[in-house]
Image (tube, rainbow, N blue to C red; front, side):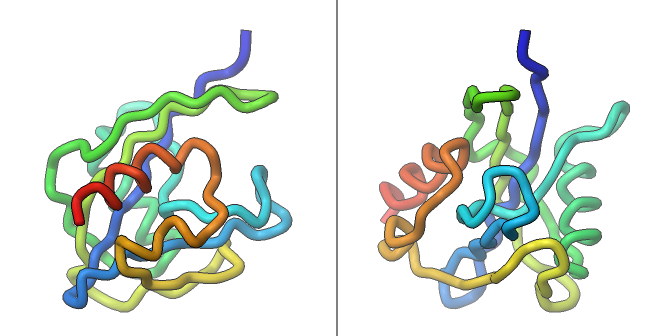
Length: 132
């Protein structure tokens, strides 16, 4: 049986109604695909504090979550299964800066489908586009 990994992803929107998109580096699993930044939920963590911790570590900024799940998707990759929980949030301190990712870009919802997304992120992308 494949390992199930519980992951949280931040849908960070700025005042111009653009969404932060992060390009996975060549060294990461599922390389050179776009995703919403985030990471694994550790034992004993709730999804909201896990996301705040991950964004602080990955993007060197503080976020505030909207305390509700935007999209919950389970996707089976070749070697593992991911339960990706996407949560809307906003930056409350600092500016997102990349440390693990190759690139960060802000895009309007109607441009999100121009990127090559990691398969697990696609349902959240489609849901965001439908909000237009």
